[in-house]
Image (cartoon, rainbow, N blue to C red; front, top):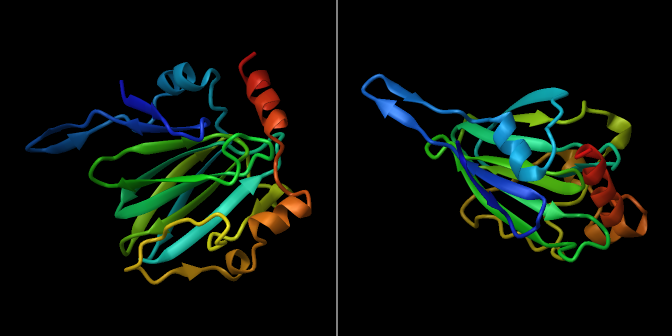
Length: 200
């Protein structure tokens, strides 16, 4: 069974697998439905699996989806390395606007679970970095939103030695304050209610 550590934002968990290796190579379980369910209190409904390839410096996010249904993610890096960032975008949350970052790479083989309502971004730290992630709902353009990952009010500390490359959409994303003012951000209590329904 993997080791599980809850991040300070409360709805994100870091999973560290047991890697079994010998002269032939290695084997690990990067996802265990039973272990995840025991930790978060409900199963992860798998609706979509994504694979992202990125050059060094590519920054994707901060992305989130309307809740309900939202989109929970289970993310791992199978080649290269990323700085994976979670931002609490749930209005009314005790940790609203705060962020946490973990390194995911092809050595430790850790995975990160990110609940609905949290924002997600990652920065590729190496060329040909490959990230795969499981999603609880399918992509729906009308429900998907973004917050600018360079917003100083959030204050994410990106590595100084990496030249950031953002998509035009992420460059033009609203700040946290703008997203809040426009009513885009998920409500904390609605997220808690959604988590509770998933546990029934």
